[in-house]
Image (cartoon, rainbow, N blue to C red; front, side, top):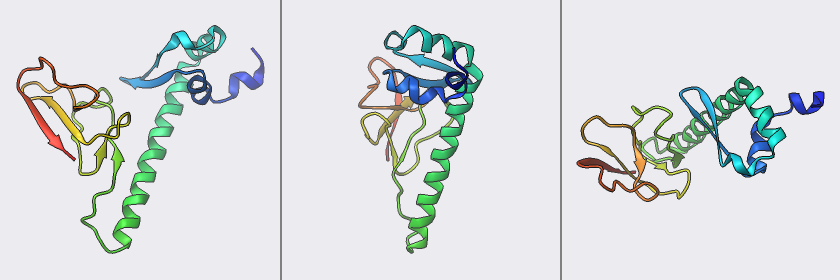
Length: 141
């Protein structure tokens, strides 16, 4: 492996190969790994901490962008305005509740559900309908 390859960001290269990378409990998980060339997958395994740092930095950038967008709306004079934003995936933190303007990262939907007893996190009603989940709570954003 060349030095340039070992220091370049992994996340864009994995995505370009067709993988989706998510954090589960501070640990990066490569979904659709069969699409990724074996050498790149080996590098991702060897640089797991770097990959986690890239994902966390990306999340921080998104949070900063949302804050700036909200500040711009308030500066225009409407502090009650709803600012569309992506809802974090349920496994990142099951205690996060949908806020006004929350949208699904996949389908851009605004309908959410979670279990009424012992909630495991809010999920998009379109992408992950609550089939057989028992009693659920539902929210529209």
